[in-house]
Length: 375
Length: 174
Image 1 (tube, each protein chain N blue to C red):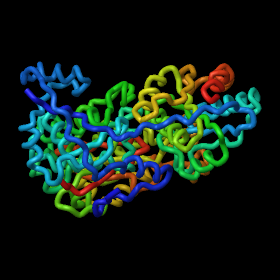
Image 2: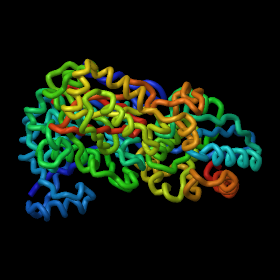
Image 3: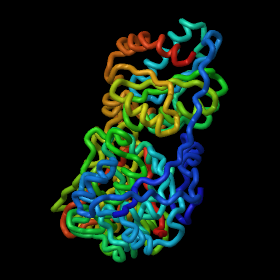
Image 4: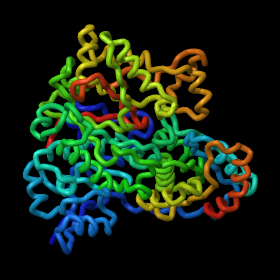
């Protein structure tokens, strides 16, 4: 499968060949244009009901994807509208720019966000993201889309106050369009293709922008080897866990609270232990940490060191463990990290003024993807 | 008003199920344990009872390989061993979302390689197992259904469930 420059490493480990074969099948070939249907009325409620009768939609009112509206979306992309960008399991839907455009219309997107959405579709199809597991699991995991660079202003995304919502059209509708792609093309319908027991609110929409202007460490994608004017990251995780520290003037107390949010027994990382954490520092917490001379890497190392639980406690709770082999050798009274390596603690800046940060734990058996934006 | 359908074309090609074996006597049984709680107890017991009852032999009991777990496919090395050392394989347990998806995947890969494979699921996940199998191109996958849940149930009870299912598994494989 093709590998755009400067992105995450190709998959390795268990079943990498199988994954590449499965997810790469037909990429770059041409899919037929999606079917056109006759719908009686363009009234929003009537259209939404008519669509729902086919099993389509997310429960919210939908904008009818007429050819005129879809073409307006496609005008903001380059390349063949029906080129297969990737395969989205469990339905094995072949996602194309036109299908991205159709779902963008349904979600209420502005056309300017199309390059971000097309790139997100490519990211969702990457084998290391393990969308088959992400969509199928009983865990509530949802893909978090993070927008970086020039695309933030071009698409009108919110990186500041209330980035997770509500109130911003780009964050809300692009997040929603990602979910509609998963529902329609990926077949991740609750019950049929998504066994998440409770679901989670972020399965409706889960999209923010990185607050690069407030980041003391520059743009996150550069730390991942992606040096492009615009980029996106997709991380499949839980809802954000809040971290509150109003008082600290040094990094330790802020990051110890982040570590506390990371080191909980209920997360998959407790028994699977190789997943990532996305630590989204508020600008003020980030400034306090950077003022003490800490780099982004220092934050990751500190959190890897501090987000730990006793090996014996973890063993008592989990007879069935997917740990790295060395972890099994650690004595019961010693502390074990919540993730396999410090690089799995991903640090970036988001949100507005105030003294909160948040942690987004991974589902576990998935690796985040950062890609340059290409429409 | 004309509108587009939002789902588009699908990629999977239909998979032909491997024909059942004429008999199990003398054949080699493999177990692909995905590491879910009690999957090893259940599958190993079914395999042992299957062997005892039919004159087959349990030749390989394996997990998914280094770095592998319930939410990944088995490693190519494990897959190769299964296809080399076994004539029929038991996989599972398919008793959650992602483990169902990947156990069915392993099962289908084995069927593609000419090895009849039975996936063990539970009453709560049998519908998902059937839908996933159909979605992946093998609607007539060999599925054996156990009570739910496997995790948290006493191993002796699990072994009892295994014993009760042996006749059904023989029927799926022959």
